[in-house]
Amino acid sequence: MRLALRHREDYQIKVAALTAIASKLGCSPDSLRIWVRRARRDDEWPSQTTAEKATIKELEREVRELREANEILKEASAYFAVAPRAV
Image (tube, rainbow, N blue to C red; front, side, top):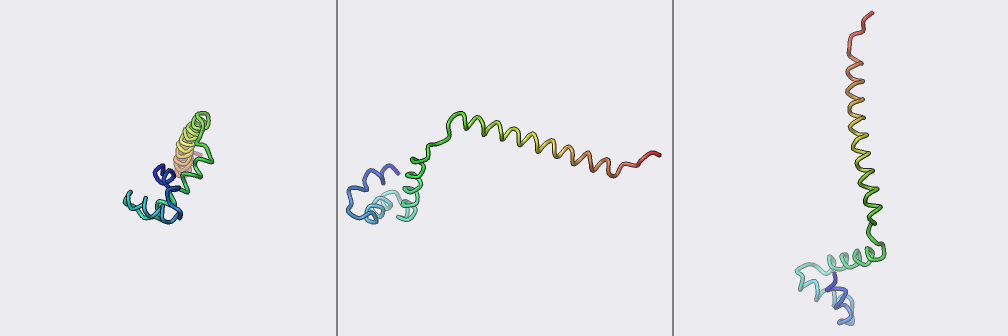
């Protein structure tokens, strides 16, 4: 991406720049265009902060625990549904 962004000004036409750089990289100009567009968008939206990453990790742990608890409850309800009742 940096190569494409750095050398884009060397060409008068954006398509010519993408074509020349893509051939050097061994990819199609369309792929390079998409990558450049994503790189620019990612620059506009900063990546997750450390606090956000910690929050996501904690939420993923909580989801995992809740899924495990849910499985236990499903198994228990299936067990009690078929267990004979003493009268």
